[in-house]
Length: 294
Ligand SMILES: [Zn+2]
Image (cartoon, rainbow, N blue to C red; front, side, top):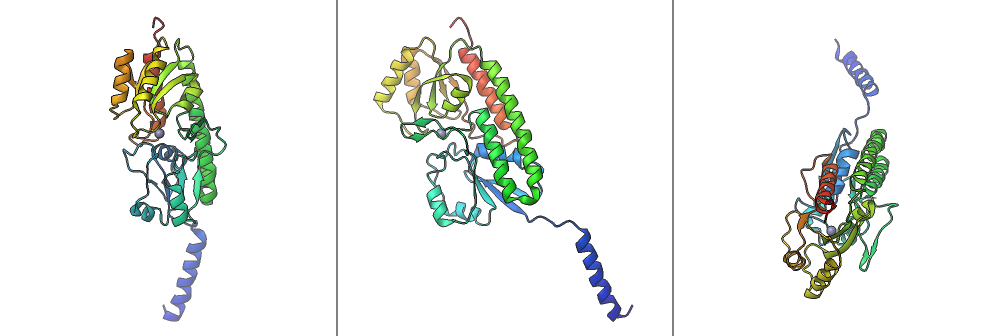
């Protein structure tokens, strides 16, 4: 073949290939602020191609009450499609700096439309510990990500809807399981459980501390002891990996047993980890509160 005939043929072949192949989506990185958001995103972005998930807070961070951005975090966010946040104040320690340093980075706020519980210090941010809130958060995430990744919008919305259905089923299952508890008073380690209590009709008599790293004052401990003594049954709930002297003092003063509830801020990262952890928390509550003779 003459060179003069070969080049137009090559161009024609390229044109045919270009027109016949689907447009490849740009690879995108979606960053989640912390663990529960990451688990929700594993479901909402299931089987969505060319999207990489990352989590800003390293494993073991827990809640983000004291989380500060390091220069490496800003580098990790540079070029990301978006940062998906819990909202409701959970990221307030670092959002002002992030907005200043990376004003163009889109944020997907999962808390939109969720009724917040007000504490003395402001809204309680632990909204994910309630299956119906988690459902709303997954749907919010789905809408936000579908708008930012329009080429995958259909799959993202379908994933969010399917996960929302699972979370509705989880709520129904746990509500049935916990509906007949004879006692409903609990004391928790940190102020993470009012949304969970609201969902299942429990009463958080006291929380030993507002934030996990904060040691309660002797006066707060004494007040909690009085509140627990006023209840017939009031088990205490620590958290995995927590060793709280204050909780031990309260337990020995009131002779109440200590159990463990997970705030679901750590885990193996699997897509069903939120559901498994919520079921485990419900089982623990049944064990702690479910004996009618107590
Ligand atoms: Zn917390």
